[in-house]
Length: 282
Image 1 (spheres, rainbow, N blue to C red):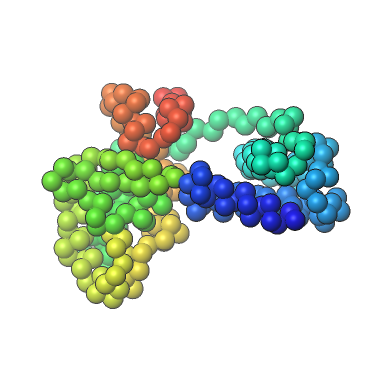
Image 2 (cartoon, one colour; image 1 turned 30 degrees about the horizontal axis):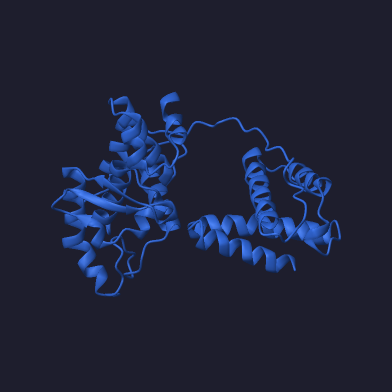
């Protein structure tokens, strides 16, 4: 019965809330672990018997395992919204999660690269290196357009609006936004498309995504992370850098340059402006 309820809940998130695959996977992983604890540790056979004490017991278990406050906060949020769904759908009479407190988490400011460090990474990629045009276009675009790594990987040739000097980006929940692309990004993108991608695409002609691997397949998030790690190390950058660092740097540099918060929010695709406001504290 527990599994059926979980399937219904995940399906609701997918259909009604239009959550991205990565978000659905996170909910599923959190709630599978929660179910496992209820069944194996507390010997509960049905969700009807879950009490506030059971949920608190699970949260203590997560704390005892040494998990971070952020991880526990996400788990609590998943459990609360899951029980809200069960209650709203009439599957259970009482909602034991209503009184659960969410752990307070200190807001960790994101790591940001300076403009000089961004230039170091971009300039260290040798022109004659294999896939150099692709790598340069990727990191120039991620920084100059503030893209999430998933948005970059899903980016297709149809999303480039050359005449408008814009790109169409499909963000979280398939929400579309338009972001301007400057002359340097356009130049690097054209160079890659004309001189490198055409050869890669011959191996897999039906792949619509812009950024391809050596075998002509769509680049994965992990591949982008590995490439960035490689060039960051080559550029002697000692900061802890991830693809999201480029997005953080984009937002910070825009605000430092005088851009208004609302414009940055729209370019980043943030639903809530308070998410964007974190960059004003850097």
